[in-house]
Each structure stands twice: as C-alpha cells, then as structure tokens.
Image (cartoon, rainbow, N blue to C red; front, side, top):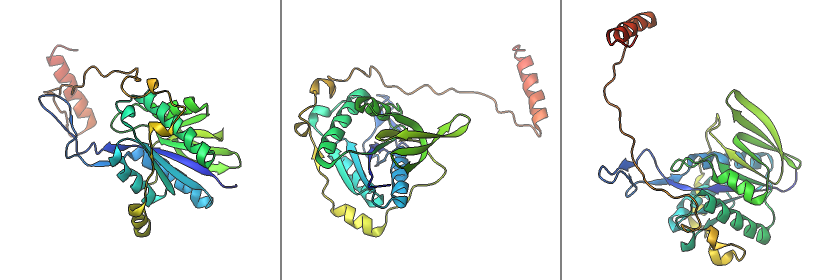
Length: 270
C-alpha cells in the first residue's frame, strides 16, 4: 500500500449531557454549555488512525465547518491523530442546512485536492449528536460522485480498496469499496485513543488555515447559507412528558404477568 490521504470531517457540537431547556421558549440553552468533538466523528478519526498504524505513510487531514471557535475541536483532533487541519468558515455559510453544508464542504474538499492532491477516502461520523440527521456524509458522497458505505465499524486499506466492517441489524458484514470513497462511522467495540502530551503541545501551537467563500471560486452561494437551504425549521419544542403509570415488579415474572392481567381486567381493558 502506497502513500494514502484520508480526510476526516468533524463537527464541534454542544455536550448534550449538559444541555438544558428554556421553560418559556422551549429552546436549547447553549450558553455555558461546553463544546466537544462530535463522538461519531471521533470514531471516524480513530478508524483513520488505525489505518495509519498499519500504513505509517498515511496522511490524516481534518476539516470542520463552523465559527472560529471550532478550531478548538480541530486542535483536539491534531492532538489525537491528525496531521493537518482546516476550518471552513464564512458569514455567507451561516444558517446552512444539511444540503447546503454538504455542498460547501464538498467544494472545500475539491479546493484542497486541487492544492494538495486527491484524498483516497473521506471519513465522517454517521451523524451529529445535536442534529441527528445522518445526512451530511452521504450527501458529500453524492456531491463528489463517490461510492459510500454507511455505519462503518472499522476499515482496512487494501491496494485501491477499503475493506469496511459495516454494522447491520443482524450483526455486521464486510464490504469492499473502491477508492476514492466516503465512509460514515458508528460506535465500534473499542474506544478511541487519547492525545499524547507531545501531540497536545504541538496542536496548541498549530496555526489552522480558514477556508472562506473567497477561497472557493467555483462555489455557487445561492446554494449556501440560510437562503440556499431548502429545509426550514418552523418550530422547536420539547415533547410533553407522560405522567402516571404503574411499575409492576413482583417476585417472579409469572407473578408480574398475573398482576398485570388483574390490573387490565379491573380497568376493563381485557
């Protein structure tokens, strides 16, 4: 296997375990909520790092679209395994939905490839924990015209192909996909590696270039930003919590079943 280049798309997201709901507006309160690297993107980065473990000549580039503060997430990726990082950021990109986001990212990928050479594979998390759409990775593949494999657990490079272990409802299956390709990753059986002190210090000093609309001469801004997004959010709300309910917990499962039958019969349901 010769020199390989892998691009990992990452997103900085609010830590959903810390998010609270505004009781009046019924919206997410993001102020004071710490930001993290989207966990599924972390699995994608680890999958790339494992390929590099077996092919040391591999170059891992990370890319994120977002505000200036997203550079913190990119630096975290540099500390863990990435060799280079780029931020895609411009006021014209603000308010982009998944279709606009994937279009902008695909144009940024083309610009990077023109400058530095083709990527053999593009890795993404299967979805972001703040939006949960699972659309951006597959849409990038469509914009670039690349084959794609979703729900990857791990990947192995073999000549001009990737062998991807894909999660299925029945377990897992092995899929061969020709490069260049896009693979989206879900949670595997192993945990991602931690950054080393040496890499962390280097990442803190790293200068991360920003790719703006001016750096993408071929981009059509009518397909970017709020006005270029066909998806419109009409309302955000918190589902009403159901109250009441009875917990049946007898000594044995059989006794619980009898108790349940008695309650259903008493309520005239059966």
